[in-house]
Amino acid sequence: MTDVKQKHPPFGMRDKIAYAAGDFGCNMSFGLKATMILFWTQAMHMDSVLMAGLLLLVQIWDAINDPLLGSMIDADRRQYKRGKFKTYILIGAFGLMFAGALCFIPIPDADVITKSIVFVAGYMLWDAFYTIANVPYGSMLSLISEDGADRAQLSTWRSIGSMLGNIFTMAALPFLIYEADGETLIGERLIWIALIMGIFGFIAFRFMLKNTTLRVDEYSVKCNEETPKFNFFKAMGNFLKNRAAVGATLAAMAMLISMQGSSTATTTMFQFYFGDAQLSGVTMLISFLPMFIFIPFIRKVVNWLGKKEACALGTVISFIGTLFLLNPQITPDTNGIVFFMVGLCIFGLGMGFYTCICWSLMADAIDYSEWKFGVREEGTVYSLHSFFRKLAQGVGPSLILVLMGWLGYVNEPVIDPTTGQQLVDEAGKLVYTVLDPNVPNAAENMRWLVAGIYIVGALIMLISICVIYNLNKKTVAAMTQELNERREATEKTEAKEEKEEKDLQKLSNKPNVVIRYITLEEAKKIKEKEEANAETEAKPSNPSNVTIRYISLEEAKKEKAQKQEQAEEPVVEEAPKSKTKNKKK
Image 1: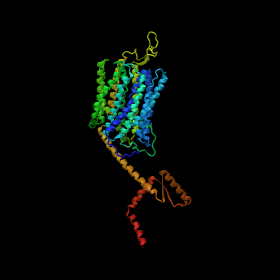
Image 2: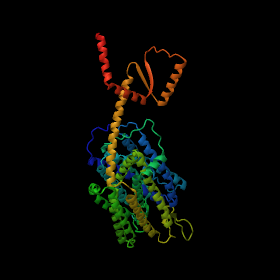
Image 3: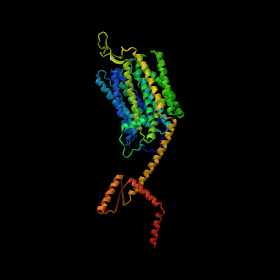
Image 4: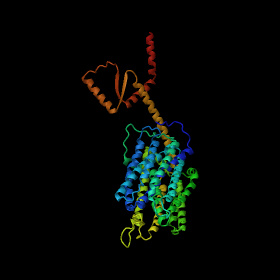
């Protein structure tokens, strides 16, 4: 078992950079998720409503593997050379190298059933490896340092790693996967791009594992002698009673729906409303830049305002930025793109407050669970948080795909109006249209849909942080102090029980005494049986001259206490002197 008292190097920049590399590795794979929808709808020509249904279907697998793997990590008491969290992360990172590419197998001429099976199988395998890597990675934040300010910095650097990963995928991918016209997707390239990004992600994970120091014992959660089986409904009930976890999770879900769930709609808007999909990556990159303004001041702001208070300020700014997206001057030209970018920049400035702190909110929520309910379940709490995040990442795009289909996003073969036959190109392949020509202003509909998604997401974030999340600066300070006092008391109690256990062990090693520890019920039954035998027959001889006593552990402790009290009486001390005088006479 890891020695919690061993000396560790002080928390510093190495920890922060290494932890950021972990989320960079995650986003090398996760950043392709929005492109996955475009690949299967535009390159593989799957119906948008069918794709929405398949996305909902694979969330069932999320509902199974996230809490299951989180509880498995909590219950795993085996000893690993690298530690259990790092071992799980390494397994997941290795699988992600290849699983991401399986989601982009190009089979445009296959039938609908084959395409559906390939998508579902590839996604489930990718999602399993992502969970194996991501759940212990997120839980590690509370093990690297117990200090609240250190955790806030780790959260900031994790956000930096996430943003760098997102910037790489958002800015580079549009130039790699679209033709020069800015509208035609080159689907065949994506499988190789996913494989290369998987390798980059694995390298980032390896760097993180080598340079991250865990200063809190990952086996510090003691299991009872009879460990109860994991109960999903009980775990979910405890999670829903944790206001801090619920508030932080709802805010994260809203953020993912507004920023990542709208990726498909945003790309489609640039593709057909502004007329250049390649500009979508550059625009989103610029919207991220204001977030970096907040990064150098994160520690000072958190120490001054508090984590909840800083996040609340950020959500207010973000909501104001989303209202700017309703500006009618956002027209399908260069001026319109500029106005759209201004609104996103204001939104991004507010998001800088939230994204740099959001992960430390969950670390405090884990402490809140221990504080209120006496149970510390890093893996379970974080896995349920991760599950709801993935639910937003799945249900959000599914719902948005349905709305896009209703507003004119169809992906159907083009019909020749003169012959009534499906059009084919020079290579003999069917020609598809992405927007329904029968829906008026379909491209403009995408523009209003994007604005609506951002506004609703920012509003939910505002309510979640300001109203539901209940750990303000004062409460966190009181919680941390009380938890430290409890842990000190627990350590003293454990040390005392260990000493008593050793004393009882010494008693059992005496030559003519054999002590067998049994339950109190068993002791009563044996005593009744001995009394019954004493009345009917003589006691058996004991040739070994060994006294055998069957007592419970509670009785042994009571007997020991009585002997100690008798040893303190003066009469007990005088007894040996009287015997000495008799010998002299």
